[in-house]
Amino acid sequence: MSNIIVKDPDFPLRHAQVTELKNTAKIAEMARNADVLVTRNGETVAYLVNPNHYEALIKNWLETKQAITPAFLKTYEQQHGSLERLEEAIATSHRGEFATPEEEAEVFGD
Image 1 (cartoon, one colour):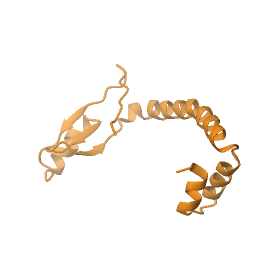
Image 2: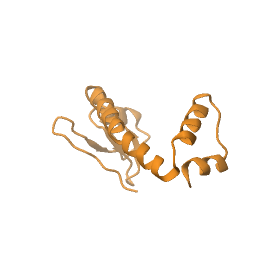
Image 3: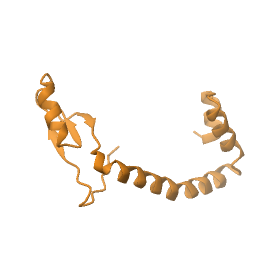
């Protein structure tokens, strides 16, 4: 699975290489100017959101969610005949109840 980054000139994503994890002060200083921190071996240790960009991230997420929801619901309805089981699953999750693996398979067809 690959990560996709949409880059806008007004929304830069900076990357800092962290080589010494024991040096907390050094990491904090690097984090101040970076959106992503990675270790010496390339493992990502943190994603940081610049406060100036937080609102843009939320707005983009909401727009994306709004754009894909109708297509998801239409496809789900075509595959399962109705949205009734999905609505039941959502209502159950809102009540804090969890589905069994069998119930998940019934709703999502996995």
